[in-house]
Length: 461
Image 1 (tube, rainbow, N blue to C red):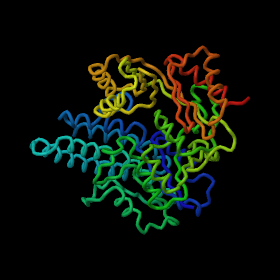
Image 2: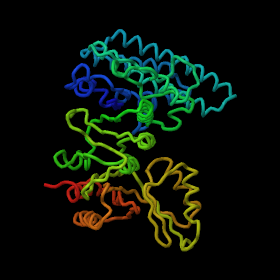
Image 3: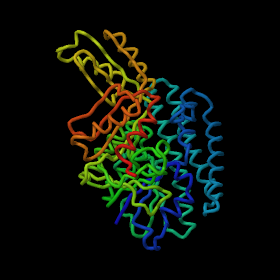
Image 4: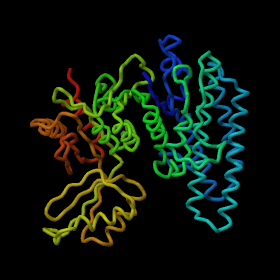
């Protein structure tokens, strides 16, 4: 059985546990192989290279954009990476070899960025393309660092491992992402060598241009399809559970045994990605199942996501949502019966690159829930200039999901659970497929709503 397995940044930072729980575990020496690991950068490294994903604090990339001294910033970053290496000396990392690798990789990156800055200064090329190229170069450093270290540790522990460097620093071949992956894995004997691949892949189309920070899962997905993996496994720091254990309590968060790709898409839509939707689609089309496993509970089978699964019993599988959204209501008395009114609104959404999570309508009002971010704020300002009445309200959205909930009773139970906690439903959405009931509520009620819905629909004492 050939598996492709992804390890996230938080888990990578605890590589001692990854080594003992995932890579070695209770396996016999022969059972260590027929696996490909796709690794993320260590925790926070990509934030230092680009910008902090949550706070927006600038990294080296922002200094490059602002024409600041990115060379000194890279030197400082290099020292931080060398310091990170010390955490893994006890489990076999050769510190001098690791230091030599990352210093050389950063030296290569400096040379590339210097060339890009000179070309950009000439004024003869598209600045946006140069900036995107710089972003790609910087992003790749983190995965190269963690992947190289992992291979060094494994080889020093008697496991035959190979560094699959998809970053393309040492070649100038104009390969697409798929072509580079195919070339890298051509003629590899998976039964004899354990492959550690960088989560970043260089390609002519630019992996960050298309997927930005979701690129590691895209690499993972494309490798699984290329090698015709029997299963694609994602190792996380937690189980995919009925609700957030931090809100409902670990004892009331029920691990989800099985679900399907439709539910995975619903989770991605509210930012709770089991897997990036653009990474999931190739796996779904190739009929490769995804398994979500907890790094720290290696014996637990985790959650299996498959194409055709439908729960044999009617049940809610997951309650999830977010407080980081706003509801936009567009009201116009002239909307009644006007063909194409929605289209007018959507042209503005498209202009600002904003997608809605929920849409609810009545005769003269349309409500859409969108992410609360700078792009949405620009959109809202524009909408107020073009429509009769635009109302904006900070809200939370909470979703009740399941592969088999298309029957009477579930909506009643959910609404009743919210009613009993005195939580008003500001707006609601559900499609004919009936796999996801979306409730828009006051932000301050979010945690209380998650507890109530999990208790009423998922957790059985």
